[in-house]
Length: 118
Image (cartoon, rainbow, N blue to C red; front, side, top):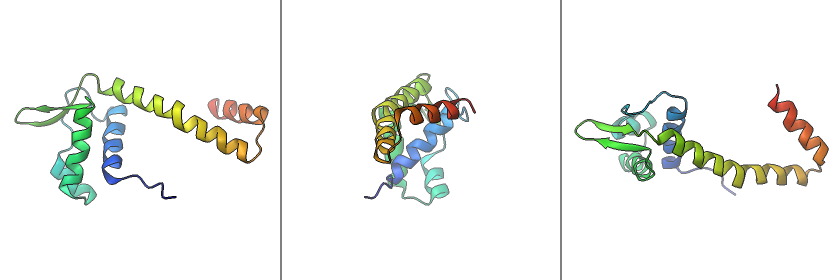
């Protein structure tokens, strides 16, 4: 099974990561579609698709005559979406993988606690 993400999804995640790490703050202009295309050597339509998704999700907005900027709600939207993904997909997959290789509940909890505290 090919687990490779589409390029436009990688672009979305890159911009979201920059918002979460505060590389971009509220009302900051993000990297432009032509810059994305050049930097990542992707088709401008691919970059535009990523920007369209981010706009549709309320993470960025068009600053008339200037470019695309980060919304006030962006960070909260991204965090909520990623938490949902974590609890609905990542945790069950992680637990399922542990079960397949015979990790007991006690071992699992111990490993999680050890990794949370250091």
